[in-house]
Each structure stands twice: as structure tokens, then as C-alpha cells.
Length: 489
Image (cartoon, rainbow, N blue to C red; front, side, top):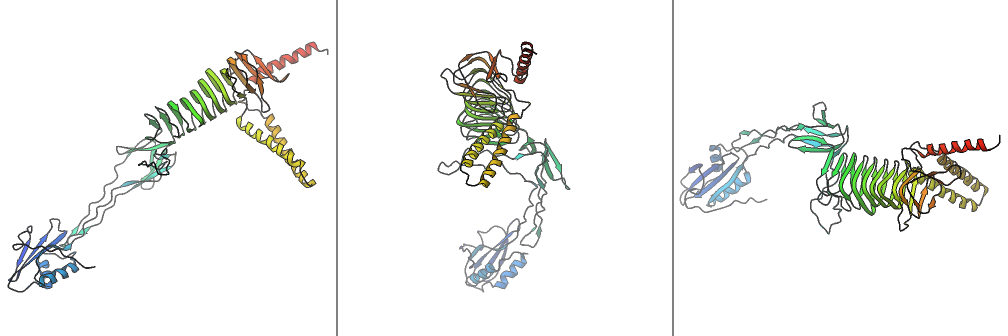
């Protein structure tokens, strides 16, 4: 690669150059300039009309006299000497460059965990990106390693054009304050472990784990969908399409749209208009003012103040509507159902299942379909061997069906309370098999299964704390007593 040297014409002997050393000969003037940090040397050359021109040896000698002995650019020196011999004027040509020191890297925290969701900084409407997912923070679980504190580095020494060593600036130790729910361990005391579930926070040089995440307004494009190992509070609404997972629970002061909501803890909200797309999966209990057009799966109670409309609710606890109606859709509650009104004046089809585990019901329905399929295959069996295989399969399916029918969950309460009105086209189901369509009936009343005559038994309303099995046991006891008195011995 050819070396290029900048040339300028000066009117005097280096009169345009900064202070430095000047060497004069009969045939020329030579000027050596060294930067204040001694990391660069530049030279200028002005030829005279009489006398000999400067040689390469002369040039090197002048550099030596100026104590320049490191980082000399030999190709530049060669080109400089050739141009000087040709009588060219040269100004401030860099002929030597030192090696600057490299400062040591400061101590830092190497995270082992990664953000939950990739951050999208720029919105491009033409890009194939889901801009609902813009939230980003680092979730952590108890015992999980957060990261390692990396020690500072000493840096690398440099050397100036005078051959002097330039010591580097060493890196600074990480000034990190350890906050709540973080433990320091490791041989060098540099490993950070989490002692609680939540998100990692770094504020004013202090690292800690926050068990709560508070959204001051709506969950929208500004916030994005949320995945958080702690408790989430939303002080506004959750808009359509934004999903929230909150491991320890969720509280929404406003309403939820067509969203997917999941939590291992309790969920409380003003209301949800799911538009037949929204879902709530809850490991605790749910409290709401209303639930519309959504699907709910809940390990605890589902309580609504005003209304459950056109929803598919499955609960291992109770389903309770205090002031309004359960209208449309289906509700399945292992612990019983209580509502002010059931169905609607427009006779919308409403199904209420009480005392039934929705998971058992799903298995039961699958077994019935498998039995029906087995029966069709048996009719078409072409050999005795095929029929024997199908017979054994049918026996296994029947045994499992019987086991499901006999199994009793201690939480089960096949009981429906209606405080004001049950409208026409409402179906009650208090066992795995069948459901009964009811005519309009005024409340208050309690409906339980009639084990003596079959069908349903309608009684004066009692709270859900009183179990249906205890009420029915009293009727059976009285029935058996009367039979003993009336029937001859």
C-alpha cells in the first residue's frame, strides 16, 4: 500500500508550525514537533536554494536528537526522505505514533437470566411483528442464579514515541448495593442468588427483587403483554389483544378485553368483555363485577357481583352471582352455584352444573364417545380375534366409567341456589349423567338431587355452606323411618 504524505507550501522556515525543535542546515530547515502526550511526532521540511538536501540518515539522526525512538513509521520516513531530496516542501507530516494505553474495564454484573420478551423499540406497521409483546424485564424464581459480579481489569500499558511506558487506568470495582431477596455466595463472594420470585430491579445502584409490578395506567402498546413471576396490579384497563401472566396474583382496577389472563394466585377485576376470545385461567379465586363472553377455568371460587353472561365457566370451587343473573353459556362448579337469577326473560339457553369436577366431566364425555366408537367397530368386526380385542377394550372403558360415577370428591356440593327467578330454558345438572330442562320457577329455592324418586328436589333456600348430601341424607332418613312405621312388620 502506497504511503501518501500531505504537502503544503510555507512562506518561512516552519513559521506555521507549533513550538518544537528546529534544525537548520545550509540547504534546508528541519522541524520536529511532539504532541503534549508524547504519542505523536510530526516533521516539517523547508529546502533552500543553496546547499545539499536532507538525507534519510539525517532525518533519523534528527529524530534521535529529539529522543524519538518508538513507533517510527518507516514507510513514511522513506517517502519523506525521497521528497526532501527532490526539494519538496513538507509540513507537519506524522512520522511516529506511540501506542496509547487501554484503560481497564470496570467491574460489571454478568446476568444469567434473560428478559421475558424481546423488546421492540420501533413500530413498523409493515413488519410482521406482534407489537403487543413489548414488555421486557427479567423474571426470577427462588434459588435461581441472577448473575456473577465480574472483577475490574487492570488494562494494558502503552508506550509513547520517546519509548516511555504509559501506565493504564485500571478499571473500577462495581459499586453494587445488594437489596431485598438477594443472597451473595460463591468462593469469591461474587455470585448472586434469588430468594424470592419476582423481577430483577436495578435502581440507583441497588439490585433487588420486586414481588409486585404495578402498571399505573392501561396495559396497551406502551406497556405490552406481561409475563411476571410475582403479583401484578393494573390501575387501568387491559386492552384487547394484550395478555397477562402473573404468577402470584392479578388485580385490575378497570376492565379486561379480549385477552388471555393466567395466574397461579387470585384474580380480581372490574369486568371482562371477552368477545368470545378472552380467557381466564386462575389457580386461586376470581372476583369481578361482571363476566361477559369469556371462558374461565378456576381452581377456587368465581364470584361476580352483577352478571355472568354467555360465559363458559369451570370452577373447582363455587360460582356465585350476588345481584344479577347467570344467563347463557354454561357454568360448572364443584362446590355449588348460587345466583339471584338463572337464565333470562328471553329464554336464552343456560346450563348450570353443580357438584361436578369439570375435569372428570371431560373424561366422562370422552369415555362415552370411545364406547360409542367401540360399539360401531364391534358391529363391523371381521374376525373373532378382533371382536375379543374390542370386548376387552369395552370392558376397560365401562370399568372406568363406573369408577368415575362412584367417585365422590369431599369438595363436591351438587346444589343450586336461586334467590329470585329461574327462567325457562334453564338446564340443571347435578351428576355426570344427563341434565334436566326446567320451567320458569320463582325463588328463593335450593335445588338438589332427589335420590329417592329421581329428578330434582326443590327446597327452601339454604346457604352453600350446608351441603346437599347432608340435606338429602335427612330426607332419606325420614323416608326410611316412615316406611318402617307405615309398612307392616
